Image (cartoon, rainbow, N blue to C red):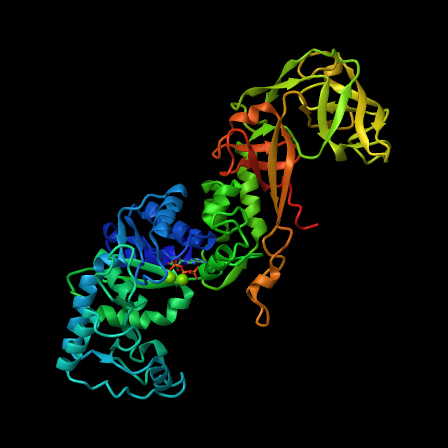
Length: 555
Ligand code: ATP
Ligand code: MG
Ligand code: MG
């Protein structure tokens, strides 16, 4: 049946529609807190919410859940917008919970007047001690039955800045014996004396998540408020708060929960990612080793690959860990179809073609992408002195070595068949040059018999006189443990992989790469997929390795 391919959230929506909910009233939101950069876990929520918007032709708001000025910044707001847009999604409105501060405050006053909220002047320790346990009821606060007048007065003075942070909170008066701990008189407002990135010093009381979130959904008339599983127990409170303010003529949002996406070999909590940034374990939020969207972008990931990853990893009801190799599979598949094939030599050794004319330079045609017949060709200069990879030559080797050995032939990609004849070594025996002869009749694409002759292997190369010296950065997993933050006795930082970044300052690239931009995707033939790093300048090219050609992780 058709519903079998729907995820369980889509099934809920289909059921609502079948029960008469008007499709034109569907509305979603993606609600990040601007206290860090978005990561691949957020991408699951982005793809879910904006994907529903696309499926049902419904508006999706980008809502900043900016209710805690001590952790939030404009830099994060800007980064989040950039990342969502880059993923290829369009929001209907940019909204801010902070735009609703006055309304939220006024509703809180309504609650006080209705005898459903009170100001508590106890310490947080005292209140925690009165909370009770899930199996035993809590104890009422001595302030629980204060008069409405007193509560209104204290709340007004909280708002006016008369009190120190922590000295008073506003609490909802619900049920100190509820089996749901979130219902035991939860805090609605606390005092924070910090400047807010949007409202400055207008407020010194800030709403708690539960109070702000559901009411923001209501203000925006979000039909389905989708959040992660840890909020399941908050749903009763979400509904209780809506009960207090809901006008039956307006849409009443409903909260539903899905499982967080976790990824192997990394951490996903913004607090931990911030720790990596602040303590300089990485170069920034967009370090190519980070699981952030900006880090993946800088690493060379495409929006398509991240959306594909979201599709394949799916939306689940239960917590799970997705293997990072699935993410790598998605980018490899995408780049295989789209990346321009070029040649680069990362560990050079000099190859001299002794019979090739000294002053001659040929411009050879190189196919841009054999997977894409419309991708065309570009020109690569060829000359007598070339670099090849040091590991592509052995003086002598067994049958299974499909590269260059003395007396054997290989083809130089897009060029000629060559045969290694001798080597020049230094006093320690290191190879300085390989001397080879070139079959001048064997040029690729020339149509001669020799041009189609089969040889053992094909090597990539660059012409020394034309090559661009560049820096190449290769990455390994940032953590050496599959679940670095799942160890009770160890801090996740203990699992940082000390070899996660390998910098090579002496790579040689074919000159076609001189004009690369960070938007261009390349396959360095036989080596992997690479992208220009954002640190690069016109006279200092830097490339990041996105991913290898094959899954080398499993071996
Ligand atoms: P973190 O612990 O990383 O700070 P968060 O939930 O506090 O995560 P928010 O900025 O509040 O981060 O998240 C915005 C939206 O993205 C929320 O709806 C949240 O549920 C969702 N989200 C966050 N992390 C994940 C994840 N790992 N998988 C799926 N959805 C996520
Ligand atoms: Mg959150
Ligand atoms: Mg958080």
